[in-house]
Length: 274
Image (cartoon, rainbow, N blue to C red; front, side, top):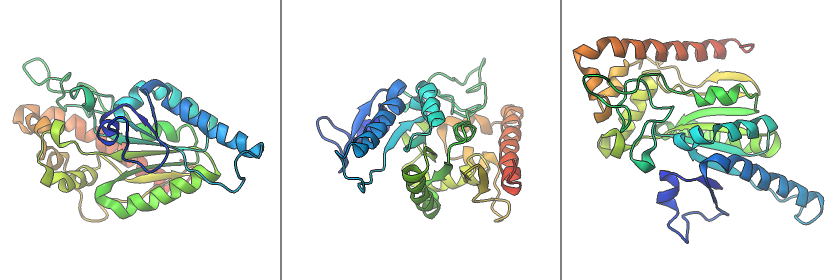
């Protein structure tokens, strides 16, 4: 495992030890993916030389936050284009949480952060969130998926697929919805409900792109569970301003874009050529 600097790395790796029972590499945001891809190629080369048993199998995983994938996006996309046999996991908590909750490109429009303020001149972030899963799908890698631990069976199934594709075909990208009680300003006990609200409001669609074929894994409307985005907003302090009547137009802009993106994924799922 290679971890970018970030909150996930900080809480699992108190120097000089780690929480992991496997080999661990720490690297900075900008060069994590090239570093791990170099390790992958070294592993394959040493197999060819007979220095490592030919039947030895290792799954190589890079873990990054959404901030790390902002900073390291170019090198990560380059790694995807080269199709190294590894997994890139992005845990997306919608901000640079390790350094004080500054906005990232995945911070949704209208959400408050330390650098997207709420006041007379601004109502949170002014532009829409980055769709990193679709960026990597556009690289035509073997497998891309989105998942959330609140739907753990879906996550486990995709993790197994990810390992298969990373060992046998090439690069895998997984985007994980990651709640953040501290900086989203919500209580721990609503984390599961919050995650489901994000999914049921179409903000975080659960899907996979397998060898170029998109499959929508969960359709809230078909399940009779479609919720408005305001049902998600009500759980978080960072979005309480969006529930005020004066921000109704901003919420409508957000809702329209969220539903447009979901409809696009659904159309791709219904037509394998898309």
